[in-house]
Amino acid sequence: MAVRDEIGAALAALASGEAVLGDALDGCAEQIEARAADLGVFISVDLDGARARAAELIERDATRLADALPLCGVPVAVKDNMTLPGLPTTCGSRMLEGWQPPYEATIVERLRAAGALVVGKTNMDEFAMGSSNENSAYGPCKNPWDPERVPGGSSGGSAAAVAARMALGALGSDTGGSIRQPAAFCGVVGLKPTYGRISRYGLVAFASSLDQPGPLARDVKSCARLYAVVGGHDRRDSTSLTHPLGDVVAAASAGEGAIDGLRVGVLSQSPVQVAPEVASGVTRATRALAEMGAELHEITLPHAEHALATYYLICTAEASSNLARYDGVRYGHRAAQANDLGALYRQSRAAFGDEVKRRILLGTFALSAGYHDDYYLRAQKVRTLIRRDFEKCFSQCDVLLLPTTPTLPFRRGEKTADPVAMYQADAFTVPASLAGLPALSMPCAVAPAAPEQGRAAPLPVGLQLIAPALEEARLFSVAGALEAALDVDVDIDIAAGGDA
Image 1: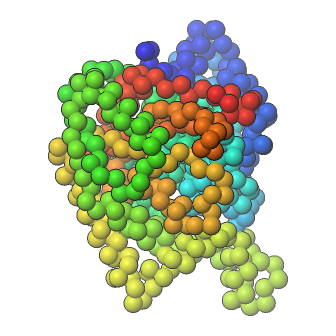
Image 2: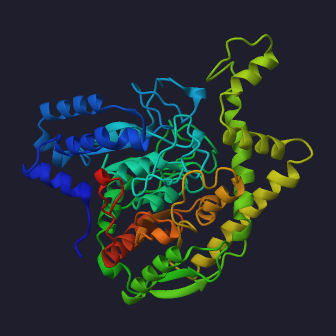
Image 3: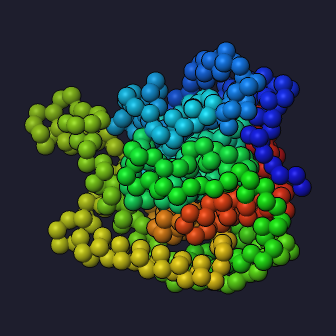
């Protein structure tokens, strides 16, 4: 199979004169106008701004710029927790409704400088807190494969935009799986890079020691192209790493040679129950790697069973601290009728949704006097143990392969009344986040429609690859070879409402 490269194909057509700058935008705009509102993909759409930017590039000689700008004319979507002057940044919350940021996030700035055309800001769980994109104050986002099901969260809008061809690529953010889980549920490729590889400047904070922006695309090489543009050191982010990215685009085309002799770690025991369709897809991928010459090694992550509890203590504690600024005095919504300071706080912070309130309360409790050592400090110690588990695995293996999610995309409303069940959707993504490691989700199979089981449409299955810190190039080389070998058909007919 030839290497898939949707963004590369668009760039090649522009450079050769087969297409004109704006053709790709017109195709995405058609899908946005037809289906975006029904699916709840965007919080704000800016097709006029994208067309104006395209016109600027045309005036500067689009054919020449196609060689000079690595994303010339490529339509992209941006998660609505990344600042972009001229468009609101709401974080999916009434707390920031209508806020126009005066500065631009580094990752957005780099996209635009590379010639990308931003088509809009995508829907998301409020302040990135959620696994289903049902927590947005602006309504839920729906899965393009089956609108009755969730697209994953919190970057559900970004994943849905790419899956539904409303953009050729998108930016999301990943705290505990918020890029990888939506990528799996929507049948696209999503990367959470090593912590510090992509600047967080202009990303509204949820949990600062975990948040990491990353790209989503319909294929591995296109995802690598986006990462090559937005990654790298940024002096405005004190946690930004200086290590070079390497040629990740070339790595995505390495082919089967990247697999021969590769040591692949496979979990010998799952921390949660895995749906048969997911297990079957991951097994298929494992066999494909073995056929290409990979060595399979069973590995264990002894402390993985504690990862969810550890994550939800650390992230809520950091959220409690980060969101304290939204108090009606300094930032965000301010209640108009409060009679005293206490009432101002209470009424202003009522703009938060239930999930955000839940996490703030849990985090505040974990940080409070008398409980800090028992909860937050102990969670940090377990985080260290999880990191050491990975270090031990990588002394024996080059990459780890495991499911991205335990289940297929679930129905909207299915887990909203049970937060613990919702949190378990992140069981396989949280460990890599706690360890700060790069992880990539990609499609490995499509589960056929099964009306007798309540599945009216085919649904994608995602697998996750995890590599040692700073080894994104290795992830892309393995994922690119595996993508070609599996040849998963993730094309869906959006006009038909998700029928394959």
